[in-house]
Image 1 (cartoon, rainbow, N blue to C red):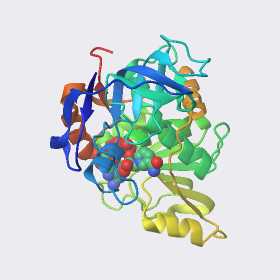
Image 2 (cartoon, helix red, strand yellow):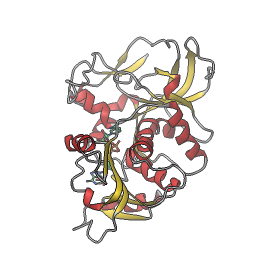
Image 3 (cartoon, rainbow, N blue to C red):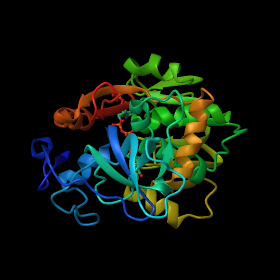
Image 4 (cartoon, protein in one colour):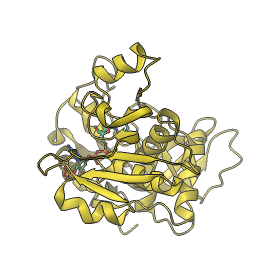
Length: 318
Ligand SMILES: NC(=O)c1ccc[n+]([C@@H]2O[C@H](COP(=O)([O-])OP(=O)(O)OC[C@H]3O[C@@H](n4cnc5c(N)ncnc54)[C@H](OP(=O)(O)O)[C@@H]3O)[C@@H](O)[C@H]2O)c1
């Protein structure tokens, strides 16, 4: 089967489209005929070698954690996903192996794609959506129904941020999105009650404090804590050393600080799908590339300017 492979650490120039053996589903796993995948910053961070001491890559590697497609075969013990079912997943293992014609994912990290969601949106949702959901619900303790108070999403135009903003809005929070001037209309279109333009002078002067701040761009809580109410929560999915230090060293502080570390979960994917079905969540597509042009998708993600999700289509016109 066709797949993207890299054989050493480096940049997009190391990505090759080549033939590799088709995987087989093990017990509790699905073999998915992939229609679309998405690129997340973790893909190129792993490939760059930045995490080689904590999370080394095993070469040759096929990247890609998000997949959307159809069940082509099921492993032993799988009785709740039938061949032919449209599914999406956040692959849990290694470097993912989603940028390929076929991929294997556990049923525990997979969910049926809801009616009306195309393969592109379905591929853009798992990793970013679960990071958004888990950050708000688990780390910031935001109820998914009946949330009250003010929620600030930093990086509201990005892959994680644009989903976090919609989840917060659906929960009932007063949502404020931080974005650049060129993305104001996009973030308002997601349902933001207000927008802060980070590229304007003194963007945070005269701002009422927040109950929750979810930082999807950077980690250091320092500059944000003055904007947080007592009893409020700050979380970052891009945690710095200071995020971890503050989260552990100061458990009695009136301002909670947490690092968000995604745990793939089919149950959470189903929660996101229900929000989609209720018309409260959509995946915005920044750009999409055919598998053969994965390098361009990499470069687009590395530029850090994506508005929504960057997709890679394995099957054209999905
Ligand atoms: N911990 C975890 O488990 C986990 C999971 C998922 C993602 N992450 C990390 O979370 C980060 C975000 O991921 P992502 O997929 O959302 O990235 P992304 O889509 O590439 O984010 C790009 C967006 O960030 C915005 N942005 C850049 N600088 C900003 C600033 N100073 N203030 C506000 N917005 C700014 C950009 O808007 P402009 O172009 O307008 O600046 C752009 O829309 C990445 O570092 C990723 O590795 C961690």
